[in-house]
Image (tube, rainbow, N blue to C red):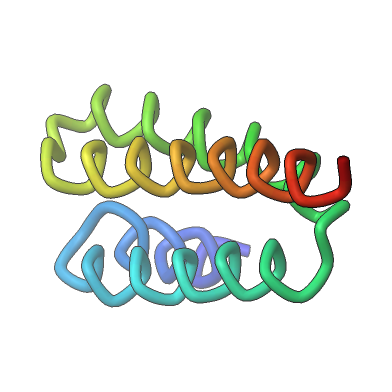
Length: 84
C-alpha cells in the first residue's frame, strides 16, 4: 500500500498536483453535467479538497476547487430555475 499512497500523495500534492487537479476537475464537472444528482456527491468532495489544499499551502489549487464548488452550486440553482 505504500506505493499507492505515494502515488496519490504525489498526484494530489506533489510534482503532479496540477495534473491530478485537472483529472479531478474533469471528473467532477463531467459527472455534474451528465448526471445532476452527482452534484450532491461531488460538492462536499470539492469543498473538502479545497480546504485540504489550503492546509498544504497550495493557493492556486484552493482557488480552482472553490471556483469548481461555486460552479456546482450555480449549476444546481440554474437547473432548479429551469424546471420551474
